[in-house]
Length: 372
Image (tube, rainbow, N blue to C red; front, side, top):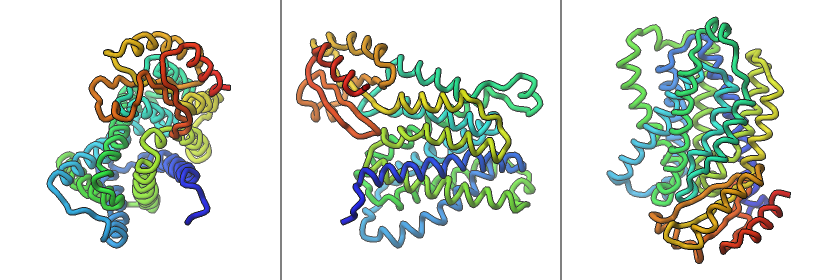
């Protein structure tokens, strides 16, 4: 038995994940500066990842791999499309029109798209994160944007599409892993279908054969780093942590990536590092440190009574993240709740407390205890 606690392993894994992926932002920006094709580069990157993951899956999971079904193939195709093809496509076009620091900061919106059960984030939480995001990367001047030939509006839209795809990719993994627990095979199939999808898109839109060539050592280095670290390693760690810690645990570590990416971009690419970036990263981290989830139902009288108080308290405790989960149409969630309303407290993706009942005063005291 390993002397290292399981939870500690997950924390270490996420630190490695975010450090490696922060470097990915800088390396992809470097590759774009070299002039790589925004369609062919993700294809080659995914091929590199697949060439590492597939042999690992074949040799390590011979006994664990379930029999293949048509339903699994369809789900792997969807995961490849959403989690890799569209995800990386939106990302590289977004990064091309913004910067590594901004792209990394935008990814802090991913937790807002990730439900816990049937969780939807409240408006106050969204406003807090938006304020933090504005601090992370101050907008560049209009003339600078024109000189760099960047369309920041298009870049922001693409990055939000990237965040939506990434969060969907994280959430979709969890239920499928229960039916198909072979992690390396799981992600290898997704990569395989993504390679086919990228190839079809690139072959149709990128007709210039010169754009398919790797012509410098810098491009080769960028390709190997993004394929081995930014894809293969990241996919493997992400699916490991999702299986053991859940989607919320994965998303809680994203602010760390923002800070590392900002520092790396400053030294490697000469980007300006604003004090607001550091402050914004700290604020986002504190905002995601503790999540308070209220499971309620519209047909429950006490749930309806406590909801206004829950929303009011979310303004009083700005350092906590408040989430309301409507369980009306979620019987799977309802089965795990003995009474309603139910308040669950999560720190770093792990449940640390639970409270039953509609007592506003008791809820206030519990919130104060966790915020101090």
